[in-house]
Image (cartoon, rainbow, N blue to C red):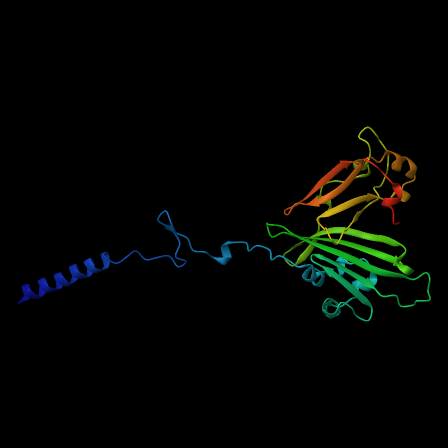
Amino acid sequence: MKNTSLNFIILLLLGSFFFWSCQPEQQPIDGVTHAGTSYLDSIQTRELPQKRLSIKDAFLKLSEEEFVLDGLKNMSIQERKTLLKLKKTANYESVWVGNYLKVTEKASNQDDGYEQTEQIRLAIFNSLKQKNILFISQELISKGRQKVSLIHQGFYEYQHQTWTNISQHLPLITTQTFLENSSKVISPEDHIYFELNPLDINYLQAVLIHEKYPNKDEIANKEAYKVALVWTGNEFILDRQAMVQYNISEHHRH
């Protein structure tokens, strides 16, 4: 009787071992197996890509630090949302074209011939690598929109909920970039601005402000290249082409 019970227990153990050995190999949690090794996709082990921003999102995410003009600096988030939705508020109006946005202050005193109104123009560049770069041009406009004075321009990258000025990391453009290669002009400062075209924001024309140079006639006579920053989809590259014809009046609005 004891032998019979012992044999029965041995048979049960053998049967259990056979049953478990025939079970299929357990799959990893995410169902991915490579070369016999399972990889668990963990959000803690990967840096998530940056979300691509629309121009409207970028405008809402700007902080006071990015604004130079007082009125725009003091504009609340709610007023910005209203401006984007209705295209106007009591003090501002906006124009939106794709990745381009222009916000202009309304004149408060139509009879004041010296009043200047604020304007900001923005363009957002999203790369295939999920990079978000914002170009900002802040300006003052004279009455009648006859003259636009540039106050500040800059390039910013959005990372980890903050904007970082990256202008110094872009291709270098100086006064010499515009001149004949053999020309050497000594200038303590570079007076350059970028012309933003709402219909083609990927081509940022760089322009010399001749009037701000003490030797403006010499600068104008030796200017031989058309210079621009071109957005390729991943980065800005320098575009420098020899001028065929040059008309100084076409390059000035200051």
